[in-house]
Image (cartoon, rainbow over all chains, first blue to last red; front, side, top):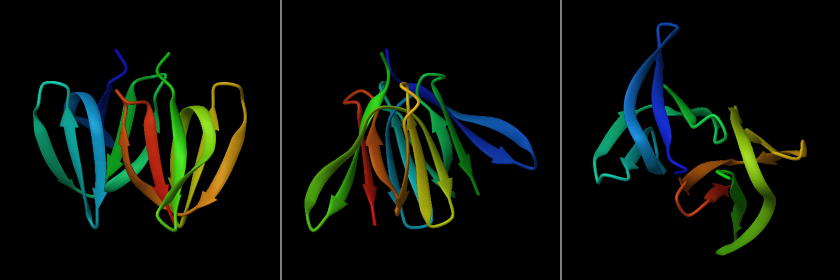
Length: 61
Length: 61
Protein backbone atom coordinates (compact mmCIF):
# COMPACT_ATOMS: atom_id res chain seq x y z
CA UNK A 1 0.00 0.00 0.00
CA UNK A 2 1.71 3.10 -1.24
CA UNK A 3 -0.71 5.82 -0.39
CA UNK A 4 0.24 8.67 1.92
CA UNK A 5 -1.52 10.89 4.39
CA UNK A 6 -1.89 14.54 3.44
CA UNK A 7 -1.42 17.23 6.08
CA UNK A 8 -1.97 20.97 5.85
CA UNK A 9 0.60 23.13 7.65
CA UNK A 10 -1.30 25.86 9.40
CA UNK A 11 0.03 28.13 12.13
CA UNK A 12 2.97 25.79 12.63
CA UNK A 13 0.72 22.77 13.14
CA UNK A 14 0.05 19.85 10.87
CA UNK A 15 -3.62 19.16 10.33
CA UNK A 16 -4.65 15.88 8.71
CA UNK A 17 -6.57 16.61 5.52
CA UNK A 18 -6.98 13.20 3.93
CA UNK A 19 -5.72 9.70 4.54
CA UNK A 20 -4.65 7.10 1.99
CA UNK A 21 -4.06 9.68 -0.74
CA UNK A 22 -3.36 8.32 -4.18
CA UNK A 23 -3.64 11.28 -6.54
CA UNK A 24 -2.53 14.91 -6.19
CA UNK A 25 -3.05 17.56 -8.82
CA UNK A 26 -1.75 21.07 -8.71
CA UNK A 27 -4.41 23.36 -10.11
CA UNK A 28 -3.24 26.95 -9.94
CA UNK A 29 -3.62 28.13 -6.37
CA UNK A 30 -5.21 24.93 -5.14
CA UNK A 31 -4.41 21.26 -4.86
CA UNK A 32 -6.89 18.52 -5.59
CA UNK A 33 -6.26 15.36 -3.64
CA UNK A 34 -8.06 12.05 -3.94
CA UNK A 35 -7.66 8.90 -1.98
CA UNK A 36 -8.00 5.21 -2.76
CA UNK A 37 -11.55 5.21 -1.36
CA UNK A 38 -12.72 7.75 -3.93
CA UNK A 39 -12.86 10.66 -1.50
CA UNK A 40 -11.70 13.99 -2.90
CA UNK A 41 -10.70 17.27 -1.36
CA UNK A 42 -9.59 20.56 -2.79
CA UNK A 43 -7.20 22.54 -0.64
CA UNK A 44 -6.33 26.16 -1.23
CA UNK A 45 -2.57 26.10 -1.19
CA UNK A 46 0.32 24.18 -2.65
CA UNK A 47 2.42 21.12 -2.10
CA UNK A 48 5.29 21.93 0.25
CA UNK A 49 7.02 18.57 0.45
CA UNK A 50 6.50 14.89 0.69
CA UNK A 51 8.21 11.71 1.69
CA UNK A 52 6.80 8.65 0.01
CA UNK A 53 8.72 6.26 2.24
CA UNK A 54 7.22 7.99 5.28
CA UNK A 55 3.80 8.13 3.56
CA UNK A 56 3.53 11.82 4.28
CA UNK A 57 2.49 14.76 2.13
CA UNK A 58 2.71 18.31 3.44
CA UNK A 59 0.59 21.07 1.96
CA UNK A 60 0.80 24.74 2.85
CA UNK A 61 -1.53 27.67 2.33
CA UNK B 1 8.50 -0.24 -2.10
CA UNK B 2 6.59 3.00 -2.26
CA UNK B 3 8.88 5.21 -4.24
CA UNK B 4 7.81 6.74 -7.53
CA UNK B 5 9.50 7.77 -10.74
CA UNK B 6 9.65 11.48 -11.44
CA UNK B 7 9.10 12.75 -14.97
CA UNK B 8 9.45 16.25 -16.36
CA UNK B 9 6.80 17.29 -18.90
CA UNK B 10 8.59 19.09 -21.68
CA UNK B 11 7.15 19.89 -25.11
CA UNK B 12 4.34 17.42 -24.51
CA UNK B 13 6.75 14.60 -23.71
CA UNK B 14 7.56 12.98 -20.40
CA UNK B 15 11.24 12.77 -19.65
CA UNK B 16 12.42 10.57 -16.79
CA UNK B 17 14.28 12.68 -14.25
CA UNK B 18 14.84 10.31 -11.36
CA UNK B 19 13.75 6.83 -10.39
CA UNK B 20 12.75 5.53 -6.97
CA UNK B 21 12.03 8.98 -5.61
CA UNK B 22 11.35 9.22 -1.90
CA UNK B 23 11.47 12.92 -1.06
CA UNK B 24 10.19 15.98 -2.92
CA UNK B 25 10.55 19.52 -1.69
CA UNK B 26 9.07 22.57 -3.29
CA UNK B 27 11.60 25.38 -3.05
CA UNK B 28 10.24 28.48 -4.72
CA UNK B 29 10.59 28.03 -8.47
CA UNK B 30 12.35 24.70 -8.21
CA UNK B 31 11.75 21.23 -6.85
CA UNK B 32 14.37 19.20 -5.05
CA UNK B 33 13.92 15.47 -5.45
CA UNK B 34 15.88 12.72 -3.77
CA UNK B 35 15.65 8.99 -4.18
CA UNK B 36 16.18 6.02 -1.90
CA UNK B 37 19.74 5.61 -3.22
CA UNK B 38 20.75 9.06 -2.01
CA UNK B 39 20.77 10.64 -5.45
CA UNK B 40 19.43 14.20 -5.60
CA UNK B 41 18.28 16.44 -8.38
CA UNK B 42 16.98 19.97 -8.50
CA UNK B 43 14.52 20.71 -11.27
CA UNK B 44 13.46 24.18 -12.29
CA UNK B 45 9.69 23.90 -12.26
CA UNK B 46 6.92 22.67 -10.08
CA UNK B 47 4.96 19.57 -9.23
CA UNK B 48 2.09 19.16 -11.66
CA UNK B 49 0.54 15.95 -10.39
CA UNK B 50 1.25 12.54 -9.03
CA UNK B 51 -0.29 9.17 -8.54
CA UNK B 52 1.24 7.20 -5.73
CA UNK B 53 -0.52 3.99 -6.68
CA UNK B 54 0.92 4.33 -10.20
CA UNK B 55 4.32 5.37 -8.74
CA UNK B 56 4.41 8.39 -10.98
CA UNK B 57 5.28 12.03 -10.32
CA UNK B 58 4.89 14.65 -13.02
CA UNK B 59 6.85 17.88 -12.88
CA UNK B 60 6.48 20.78 -15.27
CA UNK B 61 8.64 23.76 -16.10
